[in-house]
Image (cartoon, rainbow, N blue to C red; front, side, top):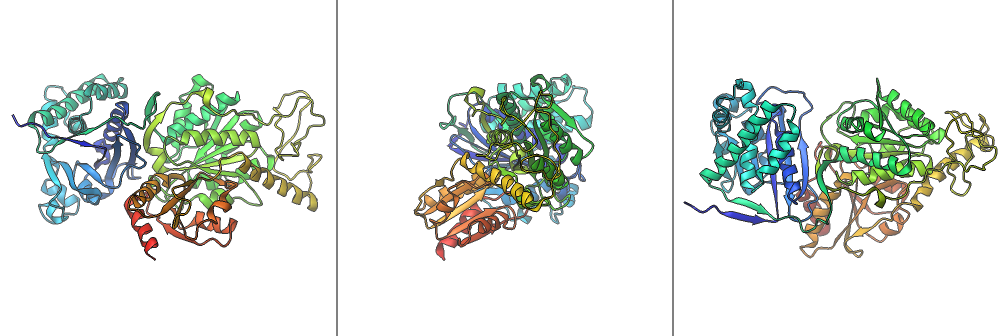
Length: 616
């Protein structure tokens, strides 16, 4: 018997793609979870259409899931796939540019018939030649449909149900290819389908048959071994999405602050999972209200904040626009509020399932009047927990709305997350009114920090009224006096700017004498890290400064940026953060690299851009 070749690699990228109904999101999630549980680092990118179900076999209906697994820290889902599982010709045509030379394409031979090729817009009977697929790519035709049907003979399932299981055959085959433990895979399937025993039994059977198919036939490709990550510190880990960690961060903050958590929201892609995760945690005292619209959602949250809860609302770009007046109310009434904006392609309805960073200026300035709020951005699915927690901490300790920006890329993507211990999290000390305070009213504040004192309704001696009308700085009564209004505007702005004294300073990753400083914010961090690291390995001199705190900026921002003659700001919009930096720190030589395609950067394109700048 021919000995199976085993290729030891540090990291590998796998791409699953097919119709929206082919179960690619489930397949990718299962493969990611199994990889995470055996100690690999992971980063994933689910990419699916906004349509509920596009016509089967068409380009518009392709759903993909890309996962990067490694034996050391991985920062992105990868640029190009080592292994591509294509369930039909449309998936092949849509994603062929994502396969690296020397890679492997496993495709369902049964789904590459004449009618399938025509639906995907092919004009010949050989899609690989028509697409100019490199001869270095190893093509592995597999009769996924036929083999799944044979696997489930005698199960009493109808034809449609049988075909829905062919993703499990592909999953089993890929588990063989990467030496994934089948007992772990079965465990995840049991959790997924525990209420559907017949479906569970069928999926486990097909999955194991897929694994055995690869193992018994010794397909003409080597298997892969990826060692357990050496960067992983001891502790409990799980594979988790950014939306889930965002929800968990709010729960942890409420526990730490000794408050009840209230979320008032309206469902919107891609933020709805936050509400769904929190709605399942009534055991922790979490209260969730699914409202009739975006405005009602934030209005209930403001009411909960006034009543003494840690209050939050979740949304995406269109919803943030609708919430703008109510955010202004929270600014004017100086109530703590966490607003989570999971950015997506816009404007208007735009591209609901695609990613962008195009809500930044809306978060900073999208309200009437002088309406300052703290603005933050998370960078990875796992650090959404930290920044959600910190958003709540800043809101409660500074009596201000905090807008936390994530986006579809990190909200739906997953990474390896170490479960934190609540005892290790920073203290949260809401700015309650001192018990011996006299003559309390709606604007009573700490004169040193400018933070308003928080009195919980029903506390004897601290009754007060609050609202959206301007108030007298001393009395708290309604006032339209010109000088008073100026003082109140300045006070609210100063309070927000004072937050910079409690957030981390901006750090430079790399050489502080670099020829080029790369600047990014939010979810672009991983791709920027990979590109900068790759260039520096070629003896070039590039550094990275990445922002998570945007308003206010870290207090050393100007000092750091003025050290560099050449700065390039990279962001998934048309230059919003670059414009913001220019307004805050005039005179900087800022270049821009922008992309608004509904897709994240790739490290390859960034590296090419930085190389061009260095040659000038």
